[in-house]
Length: 194
Ligand code: SF4
Image (tube, rainbow, N blue to C red; front, side):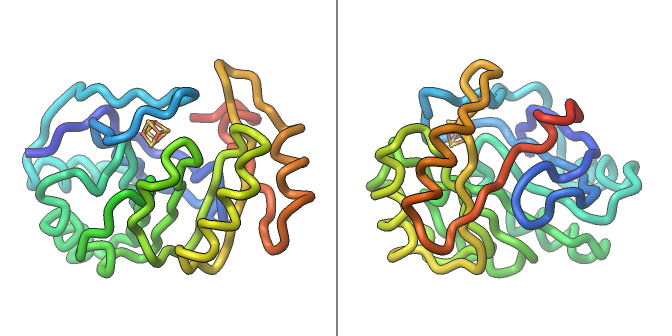
């Protein structure tokens, strides 16, 4: 059984896949507690594997984003990934990078958002994109450490959102001191879509 917060269809709002129509599966639970986190991580309902796949198929998008919370904590993820692959879905995972389960090798896209507040928790070694939230100026050193440990195609800095106030100034300042990083905004928050 899978503990979920919500399932909905929208456009990916950040990173390289911005604008891609996707079904979002938000799983409950996280192993971190970032001070600025605005994500609901409380389980709202539980579904079996068959019911979860059936629910995904009610939406039009043929891409799925496994997010959270922290989806790498979820039991039964290899079975879910295999079932969605059998149905022809493109699958992305959004992870905080604290775990590197084997099933990540079978998804199409890994977006990792390691947290500067937990510099020693980064376990992931490969991803497609990395997004670091610019929660303070100190993130510059963290980004350099992340780049040395986590191989990815794209590296992004995201403005920190504290209670609806988006801190673009710190993100801009951080980016000015880094090479090879670019800005990723949370377009869904700016444009007001989910
Ligand atoms: S890793 Fe993500 S979901 Fe977990 S506490 Fe941090 S911001 Fe929230």
